[in-house]
Image (cartoon, rainbow, N blue to C red; front, top):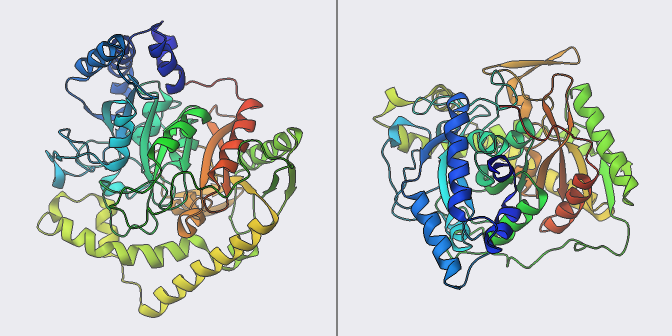
Length: 468
């Protein structure tokens, strides 16, 4: 029964609890037992919430009393430690914030709680959420449940490892350049970075600058992602980017009356891509075509003209420095290597900053044109399956690239604010998950979720859970 509970998705757990087939206490206890059993190997959990079993008992009593319940009533969830959680440690992966306990929940956390979710634990991340490896001076390094010598990615690597290993049915992460989608690909789960502003960033740090930051759900099934997204999306009256009503969607709905048009690519400005990753994307394209979608290979010349990774570093690093300096002044001895290198780097010149802004505008224009012809874009999430810890460069198809190359396929959708989803669709020769990425037009999340559901239904993946 315990094994069934830890690998049941949140939707099923909620149904079981509502039907009285299992109690919230049993579900929460199963996940606590799983954390005790495997987290010493993974180091994904940084804080367990006090009184979580009492909260589960209260949920069971409320159900018995016939009170009004939400769609996630009694279901546990986890949250990346950059999200404020009322009365629960939120230390942002840094000794500078050791012992910090906020008074209020981040908007996204509050909305999941309102739906009946029970906060179980906080998960590990890089210092300040600024790395593709989840490691820091305060809570250490997280390992990948598929292979402890490999990274689960970053910055939401603790969250991805926790969900993949059955320590949590679903959770919340944040995404600056890769940070929910990359970790999801590395650990074989699902993550959605919705259109910029869809889910408020209120209570998530760093909040400034917010132009590239997104909150995103992470889970093991598409239906859990869709449910969590529907609960978290919409204005909160505090985040000035979150202005679009949750119901607004520019997609075709869940049952389009014409074939969905999908372009796919594994090159066109993405740089070198591992052959197994490229083959998985092609198999996903063929699978979508078999479901009735109209699929063809495409190129996006703007990705070749303007390197999105270079645009990002010239724009965002310049904008984040003031906030980093404010947070770290007087605490320089408590900074990890990523923050040190970021602050030590040269400032972007005004000329290069303006050129980067213009390059980002060209990317937006190019995607606007693309989505006049296609409903979605299918491409890799990361250029290689999960790699060893601490690598500073990769050799892919004989070409050596900097470790920052891991973000090449994800970062365009942060710069432009387009929605994008990562899901598993293959397995490497070394037994590591391989993901694919689906992107769509602004506010067209329904298209992504529809196509992802189709892919999930025809997925060739058999080993869905790590043997840990």
